[in-house]
Image (cartoon, one colour):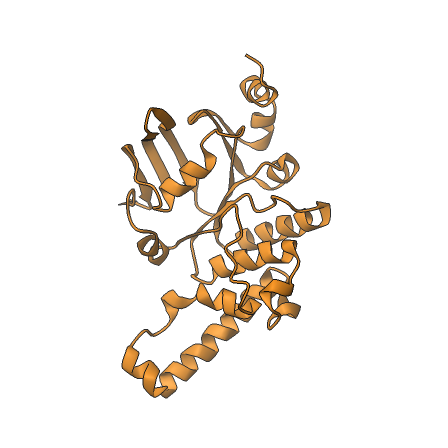
Length: 252
């Protein structure tokens, strides 16, 4: 079943065509990777899907709902969440507080009820904290619940960002270069987290340059080059595609 569908998607910045007439589908329950040389349009594509950019042409469907141009907070309510290339962690907060920020969609926002600290609000806060602790356990940070975010190593912060993205209970999780800047051990931890998230029923789409991670974890791979689809298929099919090899090696 197709969870996300992109049809004839294009975006232009001035005279630069960043994404050109792109079509692809994301099947529910899969790990789908998007790869390509630097400047291929990978992060631009993520920004289109998550509402940060509005396409020049084309359509994006989540299930059968057209979502192109919708605001990010509306997309979050529809079950779409993401991380970014650069960490968006609030270093002046604890680890659990960062994760609870991602839980706001599931909290009661009635101002009067919150001011009076009604029992329903207290129960909801306790339930939110409990769920966020579960998510921290899931990403391997159960021992850092009340640690200051600023005291955590870089690899742990990457996993903390994934926990925060999961706090909104997404059906579709987009990860933008989750292994960037990590050493071999930290990359293996991220690999394990992604597999665990997928087993929990969340469809995962990642942009990543670490080909060992991509080839080892992906069900399906989309290759971009200069904003166009160069190839797609299973890891073996992509690995052995001459056009993909040429693009990565810079051959004409």
